[in-house]
Length: 90
Length: 454
Image (cartoon, rainbow over all chains, first blue to last red; front, side, top):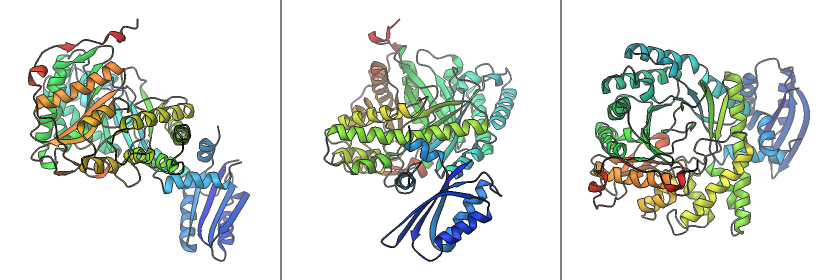
């Protein structure tokens, strides 16, 4: 298993989750956990996904999600889990 | 499992508070490039560097993409060139030839600086070391990416005052030769007392002779992150203040440790150290002076500045040492003037003077850094300032450094632009009284009594 954290932040609109999940499904990325809130119209989602079966390279996933984010009007970041583990766990 | 609050805290640090990894520096030993023929030495040096660092920039960018953390600089440090050129360089021109070779290799590798045009002369100078020192002005004027450093003293050896006097002259000459660029050459030249062998930061990086063939050292940054964390504990006790700095330094250093580990794995080069310095940039919100203000000072330089900086430096180290298995380099808080918007403001309005900066260097991690002084400052005065700073380092068993820029043609109050990460600075006044008779004495200052620990 190769865990990656995807964060989606931006103004709420129709289909953010649908479009993101469809994209991930097409890339053969398995979603392990989703947590999401909306505070005063502002959408904030964090996904933990497994990229072990990823079709393309990690760089392609990062740039693909970035492009998708621009299309929907939100910011989508995709980072390997270790950076958060290192920072917040002893 | 990681939660959303932790993820957004990390991403806020990166996006809003200027958290970045300042540099991945690959140290390369050039000891196996030594030859008695200068051209052969140059060829071997070029080959070894381009062979060793081929994937450095690419790997840095790869890691940056994987973790979403900016890695600002990729750099190279090499064995002090005075040693590499000792058996082949017979003139200053030969050393300049080596400098140009290094510059060519740095450009080929796509790194933004290469450090190690250096000499370690804390007790005495060999003829080759003196030649290298005398070649520094020309070498820095004729190259773009080369950084030079000279170690002039140490707690164990005392201070080599002959070299201090010579460096006063060389700094002035470097300023003259690069006068058309606001004496920019001096921004790439630093003198040290107790220089560390594994410092990844420029201009003082070199690959010490005690190091392995190749090594990866990483320098982290993050003054903005500390400043932001302190905004939340305004008016709290010193205990809360210290605890906050410590925790933040821990988090920042952990990122450095991760990047160092990954870079080492991908490049197949052993991991050396993480340097957990707070290194400011001229960008707004990336300032060590702003942290001092957040601690409670109206401006950096106000009474209390030295104490606040001592506290900051110590807590950064305490938080950082637990975050990394190997901490080294300079590690602490940097206080360059031109590279820190808060320091620039404080110097411009007169809150910060050269004398106060000198006091601050007793408790910070390096020394008098990126300070523009009038172009008519004499070599003897520069040597006097260097001697003072070396004495602080020698007696307190700490690293101290001087990177002064006597800007030719400019006077107190003028503004100097260096550009990019080097920033801009107001020209600061220097004490006008002479120290010529002191500097002109020959020989060295003996090591202090507490150095005899055998």
